[in-house]
Image (cartoon, rainbow, N blue to C red; front, side, top):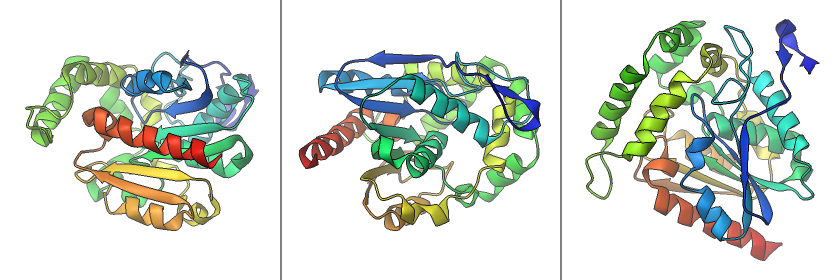
Length: 278
């Protein structure tokens, strides 16, 4: 256990799963989510000869939840770095991160490039300017979103998720953009998230100026109907990173869940090209 700011002790344990064998792939979910974000991708990685490692971030899912009303991004990064170090990997990992997980993947790659083989960034969060003005203001109100989340029952989260999923629709003509089991898991993950986590978007460091220094092979995938982060922000990230490529899907903020088959094929193609270049 290690002390950090505000006298909070950051736990050194994490809830995680490991499946498959081969080159290591580390999967990092977004805010108010869990390792179940990757339930559709992990079996495909296993079948194609990769070892998947997916964790619940600090304050999420089954991982520890320090009793603070306002989490800091450094806490999540410290917890993540300790966890990935504890895996004792013998070769650099490919990091796949969604939204806030994309932020952590970028920061890890920037600080530990020698232990990062490549990046897959899914709707990555790297600057508060990506947030729509209304959402930006709600995060700026200290603890407001956390208090609301803490007092919102799971059934209400589910109603909101269902309405949003139905409004988005599906590119194949289905009623919902998200399958039933994913909507149920999403609602559960919201209720399992520590309220203090919602402070994080208001305190992150803008990574824009650091992007040109991250010269690892990178794939950026986003939805052109993302209502959480501005879709126009993702091509800017691609252009700023020396070895990045970008792919836009007809999707919202979670293309890895709403367009799982298409997303999985894109990721596996990127991983194969990394293997061929090795």
